[in-house]
Amino acid sequence: MHDNLNLIEKALHSYLSEKPELYGILWDSMRYSVGAGGKRVRPMLTLEFCKLCNGDIDKALPFACAVELIHTYSLIHDDLPCMDDDDMRRGMPSNHIEFGEDTALLAGDALQSLAFEIMLSPHTLCVCEADKAAKAAGELARLCGASGMVGGQVIDLQYENKKASEQVITQMHLLKTGALIKAACLMGCIVAGADEEKLSAAAKYADCVGLAFQLVDDVLDVTSTSDELGKPVNSDVDNKKSTLVSLYGVEECMHRAEKLTEEAVDALSVFEGDTSFLASFARKLIERRN
Amino acid sequence: MHDNLNLIEKALHSYLSEKPELYGILWDSMRYSVGAGGKRVRPMLTLEFCKLCNGDIDKALPFACAVELIHTYSLIHDDLPCMDDDDMRRGMPSNHIEFGEDTALLAGDALQSLAFEIMLSPHTLCVCEADKAAKAAGELARLCGASGMVGGQVIDLQYENKKASEQVITQMHLLKTGALIKAACLMGCIVAGADEEKLSAAAKYADCVGLAFQLVDDVLDVTSTSDELGKPVNSDVDNKKSTLVSLYGVEECMHRAEKLTEEAVDALSVFEGDTSFLASFARKLIERRN
Image (cartoon, rainbow over all chains, first blue to last red; front, side, top):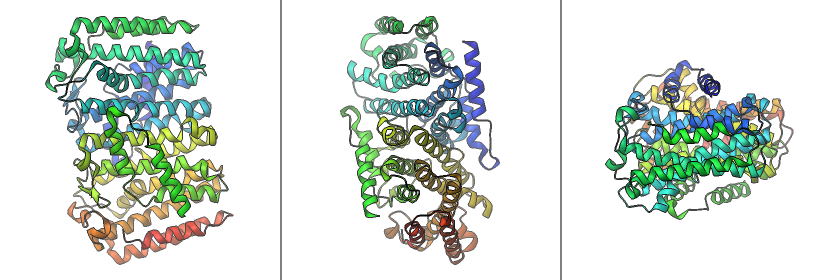
């Protein structure tokens, strides 16, 4: 796991090492948020699923980094004043506090472009067959856009200050958080040339892990301290957001997260290789404190 | 030309015809700006270069639409209060005036994703070889991001209220406007399987046309009426932006635009087919009144 994390950090760094004199601030802004030290959950999933399908990790690396860049752009835009208006992220000032709203907006836009650039670069197309690269990048595009992550963000906006049903909240989570986790898992399988049965299993694992992850996120928002989280707590209550915690309470939510995690682990049974990492990875995600 | 325009309009419409009940407002917002009736300069260039390289127009269509979606997303984000803060666009209220800043931001984000989704969709990969699709989409990603269009927007921000040299303004235009026009031309050639010599010629044509286009844009900003333009005039002066008009005056700018247009036309000489459409297209761009 440590080796893979190192690979990811190094690759992310290399993609942002160039810096033109005339507008270096854009690179500073992009690097600031990419380097702010997330858990790299999504790229780790891409590499692990690739390995599980007997694929070459080097082939999956650009796709792993791409999904992290998309995640990072979404956080920058989410924090903007016209969205959640959050001043802090991961214990540091948000991108727009550090660089201004205009640069933060453009850094987010450029990170999305960079994600597709690195998946389809001449370098990537030397190590990964074009049909696999195109299919994987196409899946990420579909799952991060209007029918995926951004769609989930819009549902979230639609239900601000409005009571949402369990069905709506679940759909929102499946898109807002789940879609990108699904893209991460699927891309690992696709570049390794996995068959449809394995792609379905990876999608099932991703849906369960994504929902469990978001349940824990909502629970931590009410049970954690802002020091532990690196961002303000009770933000959902303050923003009058309907969450599953507000519907079911902390205990029932954790119970559901555990059940979903076991469903995720069960889905891994179609793979022949060693699934212990992905099983414990799913379990660790619901035991986390931040 | 009319046939190709029809093809583009129909295809753009079809990509946005789905509309989920739960968050249809996102589709409304995306469709509002995509349908606001631009001149479709970029997609027309993609189709024409494809035809000129003996390629199949149907193969180029998703790439033509993709570059228009990227252009549209950039306009939505450009108009936001934290950027140019423009209330009007093409004679209509800007996207954020009509739908709110949050939805406008996300509509822009989703349009960028949609561009990559349609270039790499299973449907596109049935009509276009994966290696060509991946190369074309990779070029668009590179040219619309930090080293291309977004880079140009950041240079623009850096020189607000600050005197910029001719070199800086030219570099800004080459990236901010030129990069996407270059992507449009190159993608048409790439999907048609053109060789390096033709790609270089298309890039040269695009650079010249892009700079000429922007020169005329800056001239129209001081010589046109807001009725003609469909947006406020004198915005560069009001925003204290350095433009080539402020450096050289209207007459010299139009002279340069004409010279660049002839250079663009000259670059077409390496193509064997009929270049008359692209030649007159370039000339019409500098004769336009809006």
